Amino acid sequence: MPASGAATTEASKAFSGNILRENSELMLEDPVTKVTRKLDDQTKAKQFLGKRVKVTGKLDANTNTIHVEKIEPLA
Image: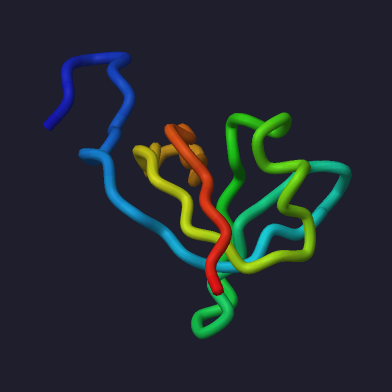
């Protein structure tokens, strides 16, 4: 259990999906489960809008936000 006020953040891992715009924010959508997650680095994500990518980062389960470390295009 995290300390009071601490964010519940997992270790870094890879997420794959499509970058899309939802309510003026860029999100990563898993094409299989249709789950969307907010990306905290909108600048990095913008160049991949509409493309399939692999995002490496940490998921904050409280806000469903991925704290982006890197984004790479998938073939």
